[in-house]
Image (cartoon, rainbow, N blue to C red; front, side, top):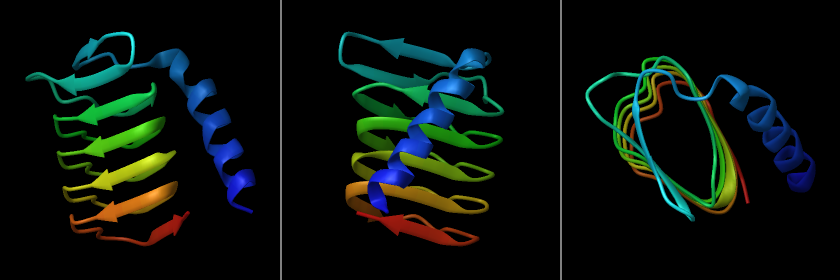
Length: 116
């Protein structure tokens, strides 16, 4: 079940990543992707070994990676798959995460689906 959910999430991320980030500052090196800056992106579709979200997202966040750290508010929903996922900020709607380790310390206004 978990493997199937991970495969579906990863496929969605890869398909959606065609229109990657348009209104945010994205810093990348070989192993990590950091979203920051002053522009607030509407929707984000990200895939990288390490992902850090340090800027609020006006829409949905879809991410796949070994380590995903969400430090800023996501106004809509989060869908993520990875090895370790930490949601440290508010999520305005639902959070659906599949990971080996899931930490949620932010408020989720809707449903939380976590598998690991």
